[in-house]
Length: 217
Image (cartoon, rainbow, N blue to C red; front, side):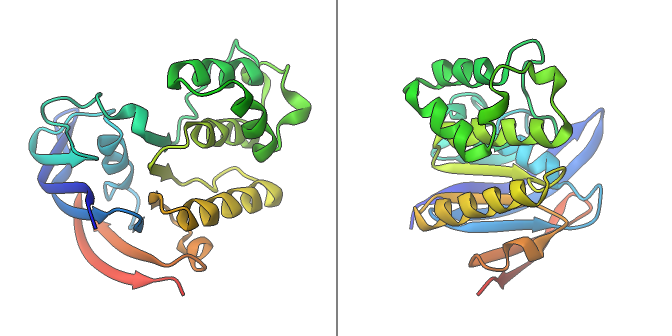
């Protein structure tokens, strides 16, 4: 299988501190990887690095064939990323946020309605994002990732702030994404949420990948 993510001896500095201190990781096409570990282990930084949001200081990072040391932005249209910050425009409505994202992605406008329905946001399409609850903002961020329909999905604590319905919708989408052969990396403190998905667990400690193990069914 083709390698979607390749990291070798990757160091990433945040305010001079090595948030990643020599990460080695390979993720194959269609694989699901669950990143676990204590707070401050580097899970969020690794996902942000793979999404092209922070630069590597040293090492080799190749994502979907793109060398992120040379250009960390060229692959962004191939990434569905949901981080701690939902990355929405507070002064735009729910529908306007998704329509803008659709234009940036070159996605068909009719996909917006499908993403809204999948996220359960049909009743608040005209509400400015700044007036949404934390859970609704998370749903909007996830709707943006669903809209992208990208081959690589990066999720940072995706179940956080979601109610039971939102979590069920997310779980259903994850199962669908895996069945469709997408490559998924999830950083989580709730690995049990992914027990129904055949996945590989990578434990991070001190900015490094320490343990790799099989999980899921």
